[in-house]
Length: 222
Image (tube, rainbow, N blue to C red):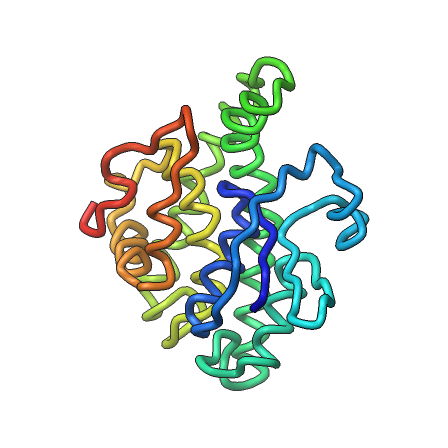
């Protein structure tokens, strides 16, 4: 059985979990406190970062997009990367948008400040960073709304890794109640469709001791 080393509120780990679920791959979920820098984990990934997917033969694959590409080649159905070169390029563009731009402008400023600092004892959250995260989030929600008003899913007609990456980041913010869904109905409708997918429900069952999500978090109808 495959093993996925993860942290509950890491959007990159959540992305891989949903991809594995979509492809029907059985795997073991292993919580890894990366800040402890265990020698056994460093042997899997010297960067001391999750996610890390360990294969049956002990081979370790690190970094969520590298894992995505491996899974897409090894388990080609369902196709999560698009059916032609242009489609695959658009999926990769949007995955990068959320994993780089959205993470830098929103996720790191909100989840990073409000959760990671609290549980790792790294000082008080930066109010400036939190304000920046809240200011940047509507721009991205407007972009999601714009895309879904013109396409069935973010990258086109089919559900893809672009939707998974975006929803993975938003799910971490939704866990701490920071997404103003009611102001962006098209984005809310898109996210509700993803919440109803079986592959996503395991994320909605996550619970961090001492930090409970809002009541709507696991509600498929908000």
